[in-house]
Length: 300
Length: 300
Image (tube, each protein chain N blue to C red):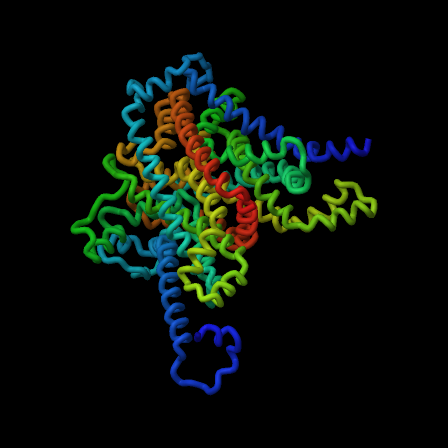
């Protein structure tokens, strides 16, 4: 009974009441409960990250402490200085390796797939369904299977244990994902604009070049960021294909470093911060569009 | 001429992608299948046909990895099922909460997304530090809350189990799951809920008869996608297994395949394990996809 009144005229309350109405009270209770649950989940998601930061900025002798402190007992940047100065960490070298491999392979994956994403979004053609199903099924194939045959392939063309080898592998695994996400971005761009342009005498490629690409650019950037992140974080192939220490990428190098510094978590966590910071910033920067692309792609 | 040109355009646009996919995705996949029937050598890549020998070794228990094989299959099921179930339950709760028009939910959303941004190796390392047997905060809090009597050794030992790793995987995959489900929830028009409210449906009824049916296809797609990913996941298991060796009770198929291929240098047998893993997943997805799509035509 209460509810109908509430929906009808919320502003026509007769007098100001000091006590909340029953509906208000219930809504308040519900919101409180929601907030409590939301905060609990957020804590679950964030506490390991807080723990990385805490350990990274803690003075070494307080890290291994039977008491758990969430604020460093004695704040220090010594761990960062240690890591950056430690020749075994090879942090500069690995950073360059990671950046080089991830950006070149991302560039390849995106360049190769932009037009295919457009075609998948705009045309119906024979084989389109088979193509789309292949892109989905390839998700099922274990990475180890692809890695084994890519490894053999790279041994044969003498590119194993080299950056070009890793770049070839990353380009390969980046392709299906990039096509799929790009298709869903092109889906969000109204088709009328390019049709108008084509009526006005532009060719299809002209319409793509001057109308579609500029509109899709933010989406393409988001896809690029996502593919870049997944290549930057990749571990299995980086561990397998590259053996020479000075060619290692960050994920392999940080684990290797932890092996040396067994149980010395301060420098390892400082290393973690240095590795994660750029990708976390990129991720937060791109997250809105990223989420949009992923979700429309999979729900359709 | 013009008609031909029009017909040829999509093929022209996807040609680079098709070529790249054939070279880097179809070819490795097919050759991987072929290698599982050979005794391909780690050095040189000479492959001799051995028929089903690699598979026979697995099932009859004469290969070096065969002792682990059945255990790995069973645990891969346990691993995938519990990870996906945990992500779905927590993901649904999170998505429902974020879908409420609570002030400040943007901040919560960004914070909840963070585990997704951290490189997988870094977060596996961090959890390893939190699981530390002497100074880890998980031991500390579990003891403080009276859930364990004395400190446990959770991971990285030959007798460690998969369950501590399952927690890490749920934590890692929660953001993706929640965001996908959230976008599904947001696509349900508000009018439906309001109409049901006017008709006197309770919150639970609204959830049961509006939200759940309309979320069906999103849930199926997301579940299938994440099932494929986590079935094949490698990073967490690798980082948390003992250095250079295998833990019987935390063995899963991707880890076993990788060890067989690259640690024990039997590429063919590693490929065979991957093929078995792929077949299991394929049958599972195929059965489910058919049943679900029959029930709900607008599916994928």
